[in-house]
Image (cartoon, rainbow over all chains, first blue to last red; front, side, top):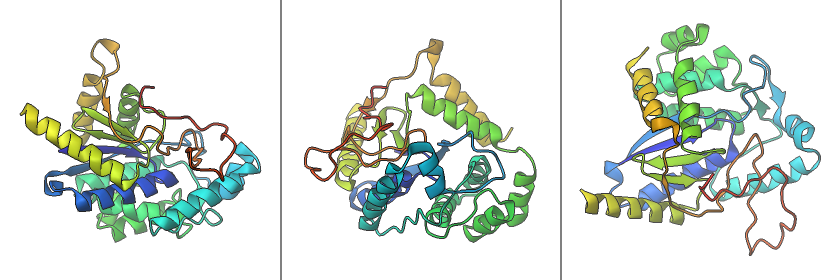
Length: 212
Length: 65
C-alpha cells in the first residue's frame, strides 16, 4: 500500500496531519505494508525566493487581524498532538528549494526524516528555510549528504520533480494540503483525526485485498 | 532527469488520460482541515460553538473539487 502525501513545509495542517497519520499507522494492522511518498505542494509560490517574512506579519497583511486568532486556534490543536507551532517566530518563505531538497532526501532514502526535520525547524525553531546553508544543515541532520545538498541547491535540480508533483495534485483535484492518495485509487483530504485515517486505511486495505 | 523525476513525469501524464482528471474515491472526514492558498483555518464543526463565524478563504473540502 503506497500513500502519497502532498504537503508544504510551511503548512501547519500538514504537520498536524502527519502526526495524526503516524498515530493511525501505529494502530493499523498492516502498517508494515505501507510505503510513504512525500509529494511537493507550495502554498505561497509567489513569495520571492531568498526572502523571509515573519509569518505573523505575512498573515496579517494577507488576511487581516483575524490571522492571529487563526494561528492561535491552530497552535492549540497542534499542542494536542504534541507539536509546538510557534507562529511568532516562524518565517514565511518560498519553499521551492526546501522541496527540491526533500526530493534529494527521498532519493537518498531519508525522505520522511527530512520532512520531519524541516517541519520542526520551520514551526518550532524559527528557521529560515530560504537560507541555503540552513537547508544544508537541516538536510544533513536528517541524514542527507551535505555536499550533495549544497550541489543541488546551487542549481535547479529537482525543480521539474517539484512542478510535476504540483501538477499531479491539480490533476487529482487537490486545491489544499495535506492531501493523501492511497495507491492512486483513494483520496483523503485534510488533517483527518487519527481515527478517520485509521478507518480509511482499513477500508482501502480491505477493498484492495478483496479485489486482488 | 533522475529516475525519480522520470517516474513522476510519467505518472503525472497518466493521471490525466485524454485531459480528464483522474477520479479518486474519497475517504475520511469531508470537513477535515486543509491549508488553501496560505490560509489554514480551523474547520467549522457543529459542536464547535466557540467558532461562530465562517472563515474567509476557507474552503470546505468534500473531495469533489
